[in-house]
Image (cartoon, rainbow, N blue to C red):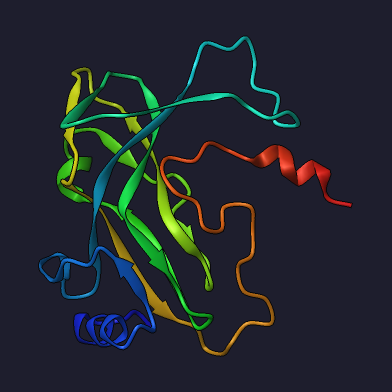
Length: 177
């Protein structure tokens, strides 16, 4: 069941869902708009990405805005730090107004029950023009859904409590026994 604005607000006010900082004007009828932080990361020139090895990414912060060039892929982060209870999951959806400019947001847009942290966004500019993005702008929407029952496992993965634009840690999948 997708949560309505009333339920989202009730869960935030009762601390069942944590959103810091919370801006009530970001609440939509069935979602919560999240804002762009000042943290971005990108992969520098590589011959090949070996997913079994740690991948170096350059993380930078910006003051007011950054420009994503045509055909460029980078990671960004939400300003908000989210904490979901064990009975709520969420979907990250790009804003349609940005999609209409050719900005693809959130290739991996699932937030598991129990997740805590800032949400890393995957951004790709499919337009033939550079796009200027501003710190604090509404960048995506979080749609909350209630699980039919408490899961046997909640999220305790490698991105738990992440802050800022967090590069891939897929290499850690190969360390599992």
